[in-house]
Image (cartoon, rainbow, N blue to C red):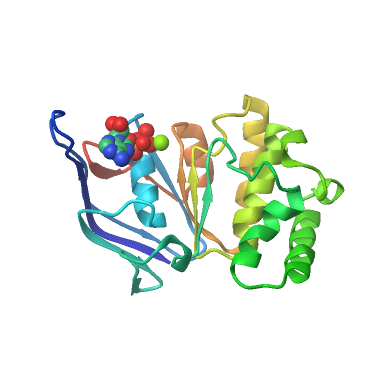
Length: 219
Ligand SMILES: Nc1ncnc2c1ncn2[C@@H]1O[C@H](COP(=O)(O)OP(=O)(O)O)[C@@H](O)[C@H]1O
Ligand SMILES: [Mg+2]
């Protein structure tokens, strides 16, 4: 379970005027639920995800995981999965190497990590390409590898930042259904950023819009 309490973030970089991006943002993402987040470009959606992941620090406010205050914990202590629009896979590694990476970081032996990664890829219908270089895969396949890599470490919450923006419309619809099914099957909580309102409504049990530095509940 993820809880945000009164998060605030401003950018202050003279000579630019100071800008408050996030003002008193509070939000619950319950275990197993998906919350959708809409918002215009530049409204601060990615910054909010970075604060949750520990890549940026808030000015004030708290980020709690399962009731534990991890506002100042490093990213690796949070167990957040991250999915970006540009896939962000490691190009020099194989598909299995990408998925095994986080498991090795968690301390699993390389052979065990590889076996778990292959098992996950099999379940994702990617068993045929475990040894392929990721650059040889299509965009849709790369994003499914990114999902497998994020989920194999059993994240407490998955953060998706416009995951399908780089893909064409048919594939977006297909992957939307596949991703939501996989999240539901694993009971993974997710905060799903998208600028596509139809996608937001299809994936999110609740939806918000980030506007004027605040969260407006939509459904
Ligand atoms: N590290 C930073 N320093 C200063 N301004 C930033 C920084 N990162 C992002 N911004 C600005 O914050 C605003 C929101 O960015 P972002 O969170 O990426 O928005 P969104 O994901 O909603 O499009 C943008 O105007 C961007 O230029
Ligand atoms: Mg963004």
